[in-house]
Image (cartoon, rainbow, N blue to C red; front, top):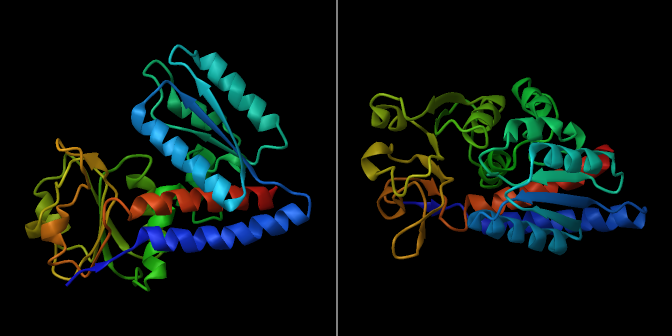
Length: 280
C-alpha cells in the first residue's frame, strides 16, 4: 500500500534550484557563506557537519568550520559567535548540537544574530514562527513540510500527531503544521495510551529516538508516516523510530531511513543560508 516519500530525490531538486540562485548572487558580487561551530568531538555530529560541508560545496556556498575542544568555556564560545555576528562575509551561523554538558546551548542560540540563525533556534525566530511571520525556520520541520507539499499531500484540515516535543523537531513541527491549518496533537513520554492518539493521525510525525518504537497497530490505515528518527541497531544498520517493514503495510506514504527526512534537513539548511543572504 505504501508509497515512499523520497527525501533524497526532493532534496536534490531543491539543491539544484538553489545552485542556480547562488550563481546569480555570485554574478552580482554576493557570495553566501556558512560558518559552522562544533564543540567537542561527538561522533554523530562529525558526520552531520561533514554532510553539511558537502552540500555547501555542491550548491556553491562558501563554508568554514570552527572546531573547539570540549574544554572550551562559555565565554570563549560566545566570543566566537559575536565575532561571526559582526563578520559581514558570514551569512549563516550554525552551532552543531549537542555541545558539552557544562555549556548553555540556549544562551548560545540566543546570542546568534537572528538574521544569521540558519538553524532557526534563536528565540526571536522561534517566536516569529509561532506568530506565523516570515522567518528562518528550523530545518527538519521545514523540510518535512516541503516533502509533504512536493508529493501533493493535503495538510489543511487533517489530524496531525507529532510524537516527541524537543525544541529541535517536535515543537517547531507542531507550529509548522498548525501554520498549514492542520489540527495538531503533540505526544511525549508522559502521554497516556499513546497508541490511542497516534491511531487517529492522518499525518504522523515521529521524533523520539527509540528504534522501531511505532508499530503497525499504532497507525491508522492510510496514514502518512514521517520518521525523523535515526538509530543504529546492534548489527550496525540504521533504522528509524518507526517499524518500517510493518508500518509500511498500512501507511499510504512513509519516509525511509536513511533517505527520507535527513536529506531534506540539509536541503532546507542550504535554503535558509540563501534566504539569509538575500535578506541582508
